[in-house]
Length: 127
Image (cartoon, rainbow, N blue to C red; front, side, top):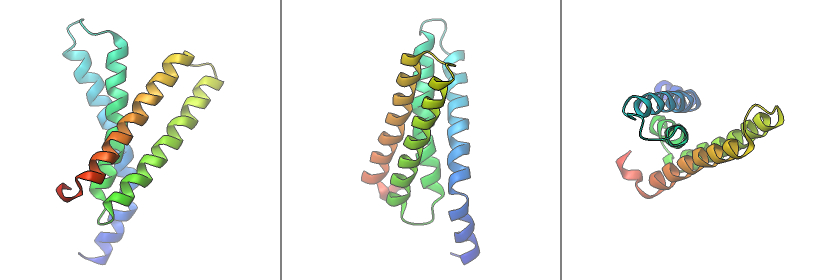
């Protein structure tokens, strides 16, 4: 692979991970809302959206990485966990959210990132 392309791929890991996270949350939320038909409560829609966004943060960033995908997935998962905890702290500190809901959705997104990291760590040859 060309050295310039490889360098650009390394640089684009974090932007790709962020883009995957936002697009995943958006599509998951819209899909769950459209096909909900009033049967699922709102917390289930938020739960799935947070889980998907956490998983896609790690998956999309790892997919872009030119090599060392296992290490990249662990680093992205760790980065996501730190950012999620800091974001939850600031949301709770500013009293913008209900405390239990904020912790619950933060844990769901962290679980999503951990599940995708475990998937990448066990099935690296598919990426």
